[in-house]
Every structure is written in structure tokens, then in C-alpha cells.
Image (cartoon, rainbow, N blue to C red; front, side, top):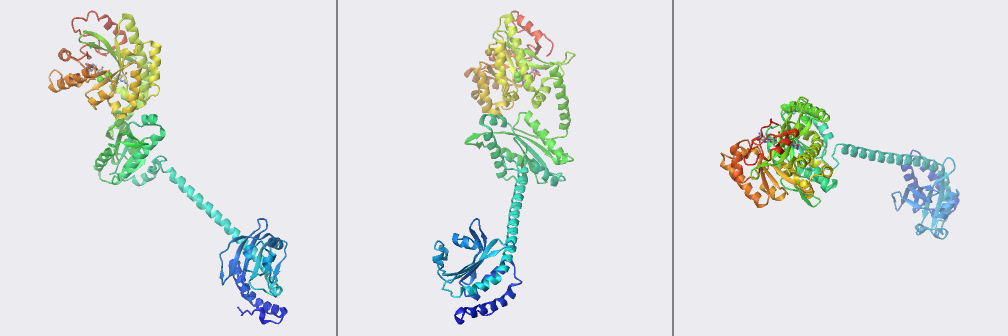
Length: 636
Ligand code: C2E
Ligand code: CA
Ligand code: CA
């Protein structure tokens, strides 16, 4: 670049203009190969030096919005970052009209409303045009000192405005394209983020944030050959009642808490997945069989403490199914196995761990076979109550009956006994319909018999834990009693302890509803499983049924005798009655009645009988007085 000489070295404006034009022509060669940003940088830099200006900037121009965006702005010896600015209306009007502004001084007077011009007194500004002659921008040269020969200087701008216009056009296009690209890239990044988020969500459980079964499917591909590994499936024993009584949000909070607690426990070399509903799958990553026992024990401990659910402390237990991958050819088989094992754990009363073994597949096909036979049996009305009389040793007569379900085939013989078909009815949900029918039929029967003989014998009906999950249970019972017109005090519902071990408070509410309707409640199978005297105080039972296993050796075993005595003491204390079940011998009956047991039930007195035979036991009540008579009916 040549050395610029200021106007003060020239005699006339003409001389000065000639000098400028000559110098500029030299510069043009250097500018020729430049494009875009570097063209405007060089342009503003060179013009500043040539014209001894204080500032030169090129800007694009939005006529409608009245603002410009600088493309290059050179002053104080450096390039300034591009910025947007409002063009004062007057300047805008002049430039938009395609006129130049050429002022040696008095700039502030001309544009008094433009504060940004404060330190400048002279300005040369020219509009830049696109090929269609639209104003698209401007070039502005500013002087702080008065500049006399502005027209000479302006002639240099005249020389370069053509190139400036086309450079601006391509610059805008490039910038627009760039902007568009940016926009596209932004959108792309956004949609990638979205896609990532969506795909993340597909593999994550919405409630707990744990990897879900889809993720397990993906991971399973890696696990396929790891034959020494194991999986465990947990299912909560009491999720439904919590959801129902505390609300779905509380249920979700519980599921989250459980997930968190297991994850935080950092169980070595395992990965936790959220399966469906209230089920979690734990995958043992270490190929050390036997490890699963330790880990599952640790998991058990995690459930000892209550969970905090929206400020309430909730105790939950879980059932667990475990399956070793070596027992399966494919991972799907292992999943199926672990589900079967979990079902088993639940059917056996929950709060336990069951290992899958191959024989379960067989019993599973047995399940489907019996289940479809049961559906057939229900449609043919093959399910019916039998009644086992209950004997009062003080009155020396029957005072009531226990209704026991029977499945009688076309030949008049039992197809299966309750111990075989009730678990299947529970697992499949058929128990709800069957149980309802049992309640209605047996209540109708006892009411008819009592009316016939003018007696007030009572009726015990067994309720399965599953029936408590039927929302309609209480309402249906109410309907039945009002339809039949029975005194609810004659009806006793028998419940086993396993029910409230897992679902205490929920069940307590339902039991109280039954009590409020006037029914009596009986605690069945006392002495087995979870027995705890504490339940007797907490739950509103009227009757305790001592299990057959204590009755069996009551004559010979001091221990059994001691337990029965203890229960008797407590029962008397809190006003409960005691029934001994499974009384098979005269000795047992004698021993138990001597001890002060209120009621006796068992084959020694009578087997469960079909309804047609019950009237005979009513007729007997007169003749039974005076001696304990064995009913001599066919086995039920
Ligand atoms: P459970 O409630 O403990 O009923 C007593 C069971 O002992 C009955 O078996 C009865 O026939 C049997 N039993 C009575 N006296 C004797 C005896 O002296 N010796 C022996 N060895 N057994 C005696 P069953 O009828 O086979 O019922 C088995 C279980 O099935 C019942 O046990 C009860 O838990 C369930 N069940 C029966 N009917 C129903 C029902 O309608 N609903 C529900 N949910 N469960 C039922
Ligand atoms: Ca019973
Ligand atoms: Ca029982």
C-alpha cells in the first residue's frame, strides 16, 4: 500500500482528487482478489488510511425496519465486532432515496437526533445497490476534524460503489445461507437431541428412571451366553391396596423409593431394571453362582425399613422369583422361568423367595389345563358348597357349619379338591366369581334351613386374600344379605393370617367394614405360618380356629396342650371364642372339650356334606343331646 498523504499537502481539491484516484487504483489491484468479509475489512482499512478518516464502516441496510448491521467497522486502528444499529430516520431517508451524504462538517446540526454522531463533524456516506437497483447497504466515512475537500474524497467512493454493491449482495447471500445453515444445524441438533431423548425415554421407566424391559432386551443380547448368571424378579405383595388407598401418585412415589433404595445399596455386580407394574428385575452380572443368595438376603434387609411415601411410613414386603440362566437355552426362557417362580412365591402367601426349577414348567401346563377345565366347570355349575357341621361340646349339639367348596363332576364325584383347585382359582382370578357364588348359595341355604327348623345355626365362609382385592366384595355381600334377609351375626368370615401379614392396614379397613355390617370374623389356621398373638389384638376377630396340627397331638404332646391353653387364656381375656379343627378321634374331642374349647369341628363329628344331607343334621339336634354322636355320612 502506498503512503497516503493528507489533503493539506495539496494546493487544490483537484490535485488532491488526482492523488486519491491514483493511489486508489493501485489499491484496487490488491482488493480485486478479496471477497466477502476480507474484502470489506480491506476496503474499510484502506479507505480510512487513504482519506485520513477516523472511521469507515460498511453496513447492510434494512429499509423497512430502519436498521443496519455492520459488515466491517474500522476505527481507532482496529476492526470492531459487527453490530446492529438504528439508522436515524433522516439519514435513512437520504440513503434510501439513493442520495449520498457528503458533509465536511456540521454533521451534528444536520442529524441532531443521532447521538452516536456526537464526536464526528464530517461524513461521506453512499448507498450500495443490488443488481435490481434496490438500496441494500451503505458505506460511511467519518471525520472528527473538519474535512474541506469531501467531494474529492466522495469521488473515491463513487469509484468503488459498484463493486461494493455486488460484494454486499454475495456477502448477504453467503450470510443468509450461513444463517440458514446455522438454523438448519440448530434444528438438526435439536432434533438429534430430541431423538436421543426419545430413544432414552423408550429405554427408561417413566416412574422410576430405571432402565426398563426394552433396555433389558438390548442388554440381554450381551448376556445370552453367560450361562453362569442369574436373574431375580421382585414383585410387591401389597401394591394394589397402596395404590387404591393412598392414590396413584403415592404408588408411583413408593415405586421410585424402592428403585432408589436398591440402586443406592450398590449391590455388587448387579443391574436393576424396572419390569412391569410393581415388578423389578435384578440381573446378576457376576458369574459366581451362590452369590445370588447373599445379594437377595441383602435385598431382603432393604425392605425391613419402611419406605417414606409422601411423609407416610409404608411397610412393604416383596415376593421374589429366581432363575439361573444355566437352566435355560435362551434368555426368554429365563424370563418366563423367573415369572413362574415369582407367581409361586405369591401363591404361597408372598414375602418369600422361590427358585425356578424345570418341574414348574410341567405344573404350569397343568395350571392351564385345570384352568380351562375350571372355566368349563363353572359354566356347567359344577362348583357347589358342602357343609361341615361344627359341634358345641357344652350344648352337645351342632351350632353351625363351615361352607367348603366342592367341584363335583358329571359322575357325582369330586374332580379336584380345594387344595388343588383353589390356588389355581386364585392365580387366575376365578376365585372372585366362585367366591361370590359360594357366599350367595351358602347364605341362602343356611337361611332356608334355619327357617325350616326354627333354629339359629351359623355359617362360616372362607374368604381368599384375593377376594379382598375385589372392589365389589363388600357391596356384593351387602346386596346378598338384603336379598336373602339373613341376620349378618349368623355369618362368620374365615380369613387366614397370611392376608394381613402383607396387607395389614388395607385389610384392616375391609375387615372393619364387614364388622360394621354385623358379620363376625374368624381367624383360620391359627398356629401355622405367621401366627402372632399380636394380630389377635390388632384385628377385630371374634373367633380363633386352632389348626389341625395342634389338634392332632393334643392328647400326647404337652407343647400342643400348652399352646392351646395359652390361646384359650388370651381368648377368654379378650372375649373370643375358640374352634378346634380337624378333630378326628374321640380322645381328641374329649381332651379339647375338657380344656374348655368352645367348638369342635372334624371328621369325628362329620365330614363336609352336600346340602341335601344337611337337613338330617338339623333333625338330629334333638337326638344328639346327652352323648357325642358321630355323624355317619359319606366322606365329603
Ligand atoms: P380350611 O378352611 O382349613 O378347611 C378345613 C379343611 O379341613 C377342609 O378341607 C375340610 O374338609 C378339612 N377337614 C375338616 N375336618 C377334618 C378332619 O377331621 N381331618 C382332616 N384331615 N381334614 C379335615 P377342604 O374342604 O379340602 O378345604 C381345603 C381348604 O380349601 C380350606 O381349608 C380352605 O382354605 C380352602 N377352601 C375350601 N372351600 C373354600 C371356599 O369356599 N373359599 C375359599 N376361599 N377357600 C376355600
Ligand atoms: Ca376355614
Ligand atoms: Ca382351617
